Length: 279
Image 1 (cartoon, rainbow, N blue to C red):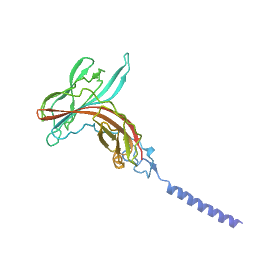
Image 2: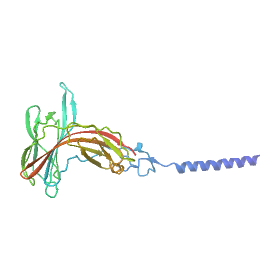
Image 3: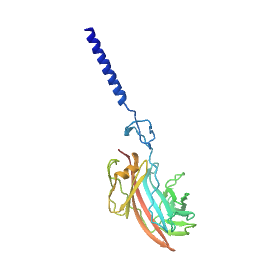
């Protein structure tokens, strides 16, 4: 009886050792295994997507490329905000962008580049765009530090001092901005292709659809009367998991030839939607 009890106890202890060994052997460290996440854990053996924390994606501003010997002058309406106070006012956010390309398709300088804007009601003034080291020009136009409201005039006049690209003074022949198109599709997943769906607009020459993510961006341009584009599984993998921005930009174009140079005026209105790309 006593001997039988000892055998039974021994079997129980052996079984317990095997159970404990199995549990510890199969218990892998869970964490974020995406190296683009803020809390990436190189020692994690098992990934759980909800563990990962991401920053907002950083991406380059979009501007159409019309090739060698062209200038692109762009007004991009980024959105509308309400400024609350004694008198509520609507503030439109604009981004001005420009680039100049030589015969070899390289960006070149046009010297000091300005566009005329209204500053608080009737005061009209030229404002300079900032030229970066790559000769790409940009400027954000909305409320400045003194809370003075800026407006786009009906006729948008551009002028450049001249450098490698010659000086010029030109009026934008487009007298309006296109209607805004909105993201209508859901959240992308890197496991399958994604149909990027937008709302219809009737006054755009084309739509630029972009997905900006942790690893990069993918941009597709469709005709203004279309409402969707397909992003492949491989393209989404290049964008990566985590926080991303879906952006729709409705655009109008007009070409002007001046002194043997081609100038492309682009008026755009854009909207965006934040998403978290899933596995």
